[in-house]
Length: 232
Length: 362
Image (cartoon, chains in turn orange, brown):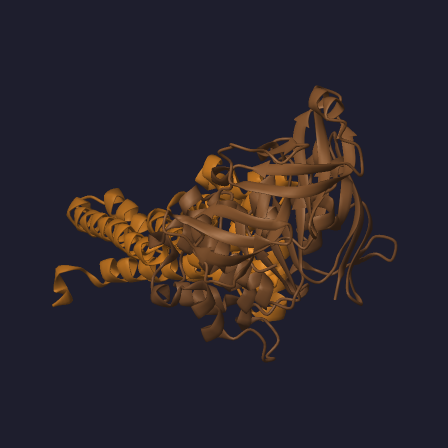
C-alpha cells in the first residue's frame, strides 16, 4: 500500500512528524512557564527575556541554526556538557532537528499562551488563594483550566511551525536522508535533482494536508474546551 | 475571638492609617468610596501588605511588620466574599462550593447541607456560574467562603453590584448568617441601611482614617457621628415587637415608648424587630400634636443637641429604652428651647419607614 511513496519520502514524512511531536511536547512546559512569567510578573530583565524568546522569529533561520551549532554542537558549551555527562548529542541527529524546530516554534507558542494567561482575571486567582490554595494549586485548579484553549492553540501552532522548519534545521543538523532529512529538506533535495519535481509535489501535498489538519484540529479542540470551561 | 487591626500604608498620594478592634459579631467598615475600606479588608486577607503595623486574630498573628511576619493568603483561613462574586467559571456550583475544602483542614466544621439550605441554593448545585443570576451568584460566593471553614469572614460590599430587588433577596440570608455564625465578620459597605441591619460594631472611615468606632447602636445614635455618616443617612434604630397585622395594610408594633404603625411588615406576631428611623424623617413637637396625619407620636426626652455648621441641628432623644435622632433646623431647636432634659414628642411618618429599614431580631 505504501508504494506510492519511495522509502526516502516515507522516512522524511515520518521523521518530520516525530521531530515536530517531540519538539512540541518538550517545549510545552517551558512555553507555559515563560508565558506565565511574562504575563504575570514584572522583574528586572523582563524585556531581555522577552527579546530572547522572540529572537528566532526575527533572526534569519540560518543564523539561529548556526548559533545552535555553536552552543549545542559537540564542541559547543552546552552541547559538550550534555554529551559528556548525559550522552545526549544534538548535532547531525534527529534530536537536533527537534531542538531546532522547538526553538523556532517557541515564540509562536509563548505568544498564544501568554495571550490566554493575560485574559484570565487575576482576581479569580486571588479568590482561590483566599480559599486556601497555594500558588501551585491556584495554577493547577484555576489558571491552567482557564488557559487550556490557549495552550492547545499554542501547541498546535508550534507543531505546524515545526513541520515547516527548514533553515535552522538544515544549518544545524544538515540534510541526511533517513536521519535528519525532514519534509521541507526532502522537498528541497528533490527540487535540486533533474526529474525530482514529481516527488517534491507529492510531499508538498502531504505537507499541505498535515497543516490543514492541524489547523482544523486546533479550532475544534479549542472550541470544545472553551465550551466546557465557560459552560452555562 | 476578636480581630485587631493596627496598620499604616501608603499608595501614591493616599495614606491609610487605621486602628480598630472587631469583636465577635458583625463589624461594619462604613465610609465613602475611596475611604480605604477595601484596603483594610485586603490587608486582613493578605492581598495587600501594609508598610507598618500588625493584624491579629485572637492569639494568631496574621501580620506584624516589626517581627517580619506575614502569613501567606492561603494559610490565613479567612472566608472572603468579593463584590463581584468571583466564582470559578469552569467549575460547577457544587465544585465552587467545596473548592475551599480541598485545601482546608480535615476537621468537622461547616456543614455542606446546612449551609446550602440556609442560602437556598440547593437547586443550583449542578449548574455553572455562567447561567446564574447576580443574586444567585452572590449567595454561592457566600456559601463558598463559609464552606472553606474560615476563622473570620470578610465581606467587601457583597450587595453593591446587585439591584434593590436582589439586595432584598439576599439581606435576610445575610442576617440569618450573621446571627447563626460564631465567627467574627468584617463587613464593608457604603449603604447605611445594610450596616444598620447587620452590624453589631461600627467603624466609620474617612480618607484612610477611623473617625468613630464602637457598638453600632451607640455610634448610630450619637449626634457627633452624623457628619461622618452624612446627614441624609443618619438615623438610629428602634426596637419593637409585632403586635398585630391590621386590615388596612399596616402592621402595629409595640416599642418601649409606645405604639408604632408601619406599612405591612412580613413578620409573625411577637417577632422582635429593629427599625431604622432616619433623622430627617423625625419631626419634633413640644406639645402632644392634635389633628395630625402622622400615626406615630412617641413621647421623648432630649438627651443631646448638636448644632451644625449650616442651618441644621441634630437632636438626640430618649424614647422609652431607645435612642432616636431627629434632624431639624437650628431655628426650630432654639425656638422650641430643645436643650438636654426637655420633654417633647417625636413624630414619624408611617410611610417614611422603608422595607429595607426593617430588620429581624435585635
